[in-house]
Amino acid sequence: MPTEHLVHFSPVKEVVEEESGRFEFFKQMLAIGLGGIAGLAAIFTDADRIPEEFCLKASLAVFAVSAIFIVVFSGMGISAYANHLRDIKNLADNADNTRTAGLEANAAGSEGSILLHARIVFVLSLLGAAALILFAGIKLFETPKLGADAAMRLARKIITEQPGSPSPQSLDHFQTNGTDYIVTYVTEPNQVKYTVRINRDKNGVEEITH
Image (cartoon, rainbow, N blue to C red; front, side):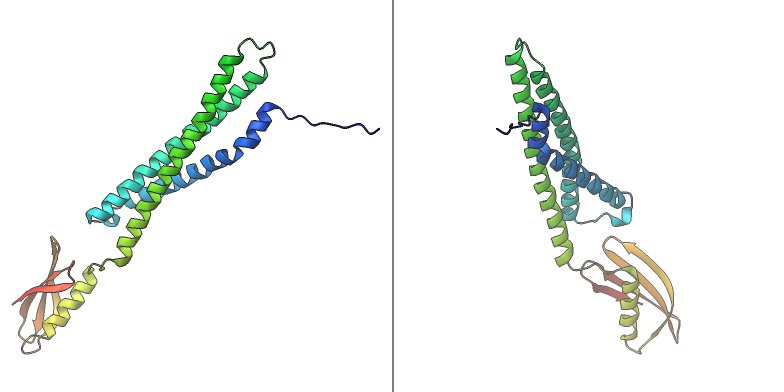
């Protein structure tokens, strides 16, 4: 009769097979969290990239906190996974069964810790994704603010529409005052100065004087 060969895997190897999905989950979320932190660092190190609106700042802040804690808890999850492998090995090496109850408790505790950290990371990833979607939605549907170049073009257009059709000759002054641009042009033919106040949130002219 043919001899049957049974292959027995070690308890540690069996745990590696069972928990490989969560281990990969932790690794992927760790990489995603670090990528999110790197992207946020690029934003926060450049003052011009930081949005002024409260909702945009709040969504970025929530995303930043989520990314940081995703990295922290993913690392803790990987550590819990390593501890679980150690506990399983200790349980397997307990040939005389003198410490079985304590070792089984340790293994159950470390297994529960893996699951707990995986759940926390998953919730944090949902929170971060929601914050990112909110940020993108606000940016997508908000009215774009008027830039400096566009403000100067608008000021020149408004000046040419004034009585006598003055022609802007040179830019005399440009400054930002709160949410307004203040643009002053010297015009031909009489060298008259026209000052235009433009609200960059409303994309409209607030005042023109000369």
